[in-house]
Every structure is written in C-alpha cells, then in structure tokens.
Amino acid sequence: MQKAFKYRIYPNKLQQDFLAQQFGATRFVFNYFLNQRKNEYLTSKTSLNYYDNAKSLTELKQQDGYDWLYDINAQTLQASLRNLETAYTNFFQKRTKFPNFKKRSNKQCIKIPQAFRIENNHLWIPKLKSGIRLVQHRPTAGKIICLFISKTATEKYFVSILCEIDDAKPLPKTNKQIGIDLGLTNLLTTSDNEIIANPRNRKRLQKKLAYKQKQLSKKQKGSNNRNKSRIEVAKIHEQIANSRLDYLHKISNRLVSENQTIITETLSVANMMKNHKLAGAISDASWSELLRQLKYKSEWYGRTFSQIDRFFPSSKTCNGCQFVLETLSLAIREWGCPNCKQHNKRDHNAAKNILDIGLKNLSGIGMLPDIKQKLVEALIPADGIVSVGKSSRRNKKPLPLWQG
Image (cartoon, rainbow, N blue to C red; front, top):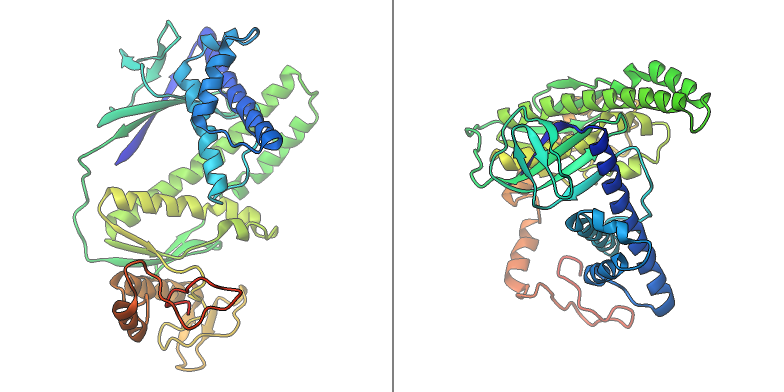
C-alpha cells in the first residue's frame, strides 16, 4: 500500500529561484522531446520511446547553449521523460487525448526519486547546498519511495513524500451494508435514507470571486498590481478547493468506518459535464473525487467497495416489485409505482436498488442468468472463445458465447 505525506515548506529567495529553475527545466525537457517525437513520426514514421529520449537528453547537454541542464538534477529530468512516456501510453490505450505541450501554469511540480533527506526540520535535495525549512506536523511511515515538490497558484510550496506501507491496519469488521446515490440537491442519499447535504462551496463564495475577477480584469498585464490581484483570486479558488476536499474527506472517512460494504453507481462525469446548465453544479459537487476517496480508503481499511453498471436504471426501477418506468424526468422527485402502488422517493429508491444489484453482483447472482451461467461453465474453452455457427464474410472471427 502506498501513502503520501504532505508537508508545507518555506524556501528562502535563493531557494525559490533554484526551484523555479527546476520547474522550468522539467517543462522544457517535456516539451522538447514531445516535439522531437512528433517530428520523428511525421518525417520517418518512427515512434521513439523513453530510452531513445534519455540517450538524446545526454547528447543535448553536451551541445552549445544547453550546458545549463547540468545544473538540474538528472533524475528529475528523467522523471519528466517518464511522464512523457506515460502520456503516450495513456493515449495509445485510449484513456486520454494526445499529450499537449506544457505551459507555465500557476501550479508546478517536480519529482525527486532519491538522494534526499530530512534532518532537523529541513529538507535536503540534490544540487541545492542549503536545506529548505519544513514543518513536519506528523511523522512518515513505511519505506520512502520518492518525493514531489509543488508550488501552488498562491505561491505556497509543499512537499509530498510517497511511502510504501506493508502493515495495513484494517478496521474492525461490521455487518452494515450501504448503497449510495449521488445527486446535486443533496450530495448523496444512502439506502438507510440518510441524506448528506451538498455544501455548494463555490456558490457560497461566488459573489466575492466575481468581484475579485472583475478587479483582476482591469489591471494592466505584466504589472505588479495584476500579480497581486491574481494571487487574491487564486486564494479564493484555493479556499473553495480546500473546503470541498475537507468536507469530502470527512464524509468518506465516516462512511468507510461505519460500513463493511459500500455500493455506488458508476457515473460518466465527463459526459455529464457537457450539459452546460449543470456543469458548474456537477464540478462543485466533485463526485469523482468522492468515489476515488471511497475506493482507496476501502482498500486501506479492509472494506468492500463496488460500483454497479452505468446503464442500470436505478431511479426508474421500483424497489418493491422491480417495475421499470419508461421515462422519469429530473424534476420528479417522488413517484408512485403503477404496478404495486408503492410510493417511492427518487433518491432513496435509487440507493436501495444500487445496494440490491451491487450485492447480487458481488455474490455472482446478478452477473449472468442461471441458464447462461451453466452453458458458459459447460461449453466455454480455456481461451474463452466459442465458435457459433458459420462465420460470415463480414465477421470471420468466432464470437464469445455471450455475444453469439
């Protein structure tokens, strides 16, 4: 199990200049070799990999005008090349879009794999002769793998130390099981009919944020006053993000500590954000972050976390008789089942359906019908492929049994 410990650091002016050079060098290396990969593919249809880039980086340092790269930690530059390789891998596996060139954004980060230490509340890193003051409010645990130094838009510096922990400590087991339905009016509704409110952190500070953004738009570009105004706007965004993250951590900690099994729905947040009328509210609710926290905390503390199929009609299905409505608009929050006459509250009914189908999936009952399950066990070979009838000219490959 890997766990990161984040601490605030306070570099002086010389150390800030050093870190700015490190941030800029890693950004330069990423962009330089991304451009090299694109040009190489366009000219000779050849795909470069990490090892090709690492060799070229060594040669680049020896060229005139690039000797300043020797002042940068070599492993930090290699970590930037690793990030480029990961970006290409994610693109080829269709998880993300094609990698873009990095620009000097408000938040910057570098990775230091090794050759660092913490002594007397100071952080020592390669190429820097002085230690950076560090506030270590809690000790680290396990084996230290690497660390990341980041700078926020409000010009605060942090270090995140990634550790590998072998002895995970699961929480005491409980028999409680819970289904969760996410929403906007209320952040979530559980199968026990517990409603957790949506704090709407951005809406709470929207007027103040709009005022500061208006003041920022009037400042002359490149001036000190504009930079001061930019930091004021960034502080409001930081306050919103910190409030949201703190609220989500409290909710996820309580849900994981109280329940042995947690079942949630699967949401395509990226597609839902295309609805411009709801995009702001969905972003403020931060469903993806809540689900991420529930997942990794369940793994940490020995809980069972599962998500049901994205297309299961949890809101339109009556929990009493499993009758499914044809249509159910978002404006309808309660409805009566025309089959069994049961009165259903939309979110509570959906949460109970999520729990039921999730438990069936975990037990294997809801995965496949009994007849098809027996056919699969009897007929499917070791490679998982079964020939069904004669293959057509358009589809010469044998189909799996459950598709045939």
